[in-house]
Structures are given as C-alpha cells and as structure tokens.
Length: 316
Image (cartoon, rainbow, N blue to C red; front, top):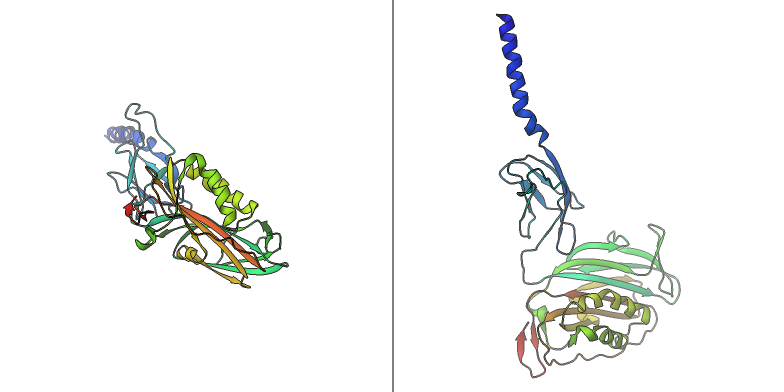
C-alpha cells in the first residue's frame, strides 16, 4: 500500500514538473532604454507587461529590465507628460522569435510652449587670467551640462577663451547646457525676422552672425551645429533674440561681471512658403574689457504668430 502511495506521489510530482517547466523556461529577460524623441532620458518612465501586475521603473539613465512570460507578451511604456507606447515581445509571424532588447522613444503630450533649448554655449574672454563663477537662471529643466554644473560653474578663464575647471582639472572651450522650457503665448509672437531657404541657410548665417558680433570660431561652431537643422526645412522663419531679449530664455549671474555681453539665441520654425517680414535691426557690438559671448537656439514645433511686412498677423 505504501509503495502504491509513493508511486502515485512520484507520478503527481512528475506531472507537476511537466506542467510548470515550460512556463518557467519561457521567462525571458527584456532590456532596453526609454527616451523622448530628442533622445533625452526619461527617468520617471515605467514598463508594464499588459494583462499582468508585472512592472518595473526605469533607472536614472532610462534603462530598464523586465522578465516576461510567453502569454500576453506585450509591454506598455509610459511616463508622465508623454504618450504611452506598446510593443510586442513575441512576433506574431514567428512565435518562437523573442525580442530581447526593446528601446523606445516616447512622444511628449503636446503642450503649447514646450520647447527644447538647444546648445546654449558660453565663452569667457577676460583681459588677464581670471577665476570666474557663472550661474544660470533657467525657467525650465536642465537635461545636460558640460562641464557638470554643480549649482554653478567655477573656472579659470584665459584671454584666449580657454577655460580650466579646477573641479575635474580639465580644459574646456566653453560652458554648455541644454534643457526644456515652456514658451508663453506672448513669447511666440514675432514682429520681425527672416525667411530663409535651405539652399541659402549657410550663407545667411555666415553673413549675419559676424554683424551680431561673433568671431569666426564662434560663428563657425554655431553654423556647424544649427545648419543641419535648417537645411531639413525647405523654408524656415528665423528670429534672433539678442542682448536683453535673450533673458526670455535664461539669465546669467557672472562674477566678476563682464564689461561686454554678446548674446544671440535663434528661434526658427519650418514654414510651407515664403512671405515678407520686417528684418531685424542689427548693430555690431564692440568688445571692451572682459567679454562674455553666448549663443543657442530652439526649433519651434507649435504655432507661432508673425506680423508681416504689411503689418498683417499670420499664424504658422
């Protein structure tokens, strides 16, 4: 009798193993990275296996890892302020094919003034080697700084523009940051600017940037960064925020204070066809004493209002 019970128990265990083993073996580790459409990390993102309670949160660098089963193998990626996105883990055509690495880019839920502030760079030219502290007041979110910001930059600046960061004992050509901010409706109204075709974008920048006070190394770096964006559009509307108008984007607190500040920020937007617009008034500044030079830009995706040369307001 005891032998029969033992034999029956062994059979039941064997059947249990047969049933459970495929499910255990089907557990697959999926890894990847979650970013926005500009390839910036979304550290608050999460991943859920649809139809289950299986979920994970992305790390600070946007990476994640999650083990999934072979049933309901659909992952849903989400992050506050962004559209959810779903991805199949197993191919419908080939059920045996498993995507073990899935990276996604989530699209931001449209808000009126959500704008990427691209590559503001700050050059420092003191008359003699000087220790300089720079803090940036930015009504938005930093996504990257170089060197690391650490509540401000503290560097030794040379007349040539070379910067030495004592924190990491490294040399830099300029101070760099990027981020995102909300433009107000008023900040999206333009009374002057330029309409530029992609074929003349480089020539346009080569001609106008020196008039604004940029030297060859500065305007060449500007062109190398922004021209590839402009030539993707058949036509672009361009407006430069200069001097105090740059304060809409950010403000600098610099010690010791520079004698001369040259600040140029380029807003631009893709348009379907050219139109007449009042050109901006530009005067070439004179560099005197300790000089700070800054430039940056933003590609606008939302609607803007432009007052044309005939004083007619149009929306683009």
